[in-house]
Image 1 (tube, rainbow, N blue to C red):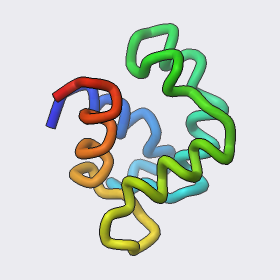
Image 2 (cartoon, rainbow, N blue to C red):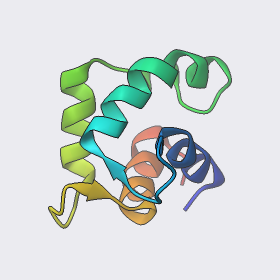
Image 3 (spheres, rainbow, N blue to C red):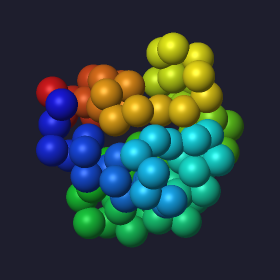
Image 4 (cartoon, rainbow, N blue to C red):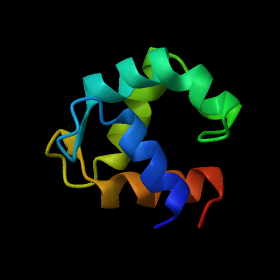
Length: 84
């Protein structure tokens, strides 16, 4: 797990409960995405629309429990963004 994945997870975890919900990912990427990209936390191309954010959530939710753990999240973003 990369430090960048952990930093991004923490930035998206709006309620700081240690997991990400679909709504949290969508809202956080829409509201924080541009500033996260500008500061280098996420690549600019990683900030996408609602449908893409939802599809990203589905691809990361490996056990289908409707929340993303840091491990699930980092497995996808490290691979997708080339951080691993």
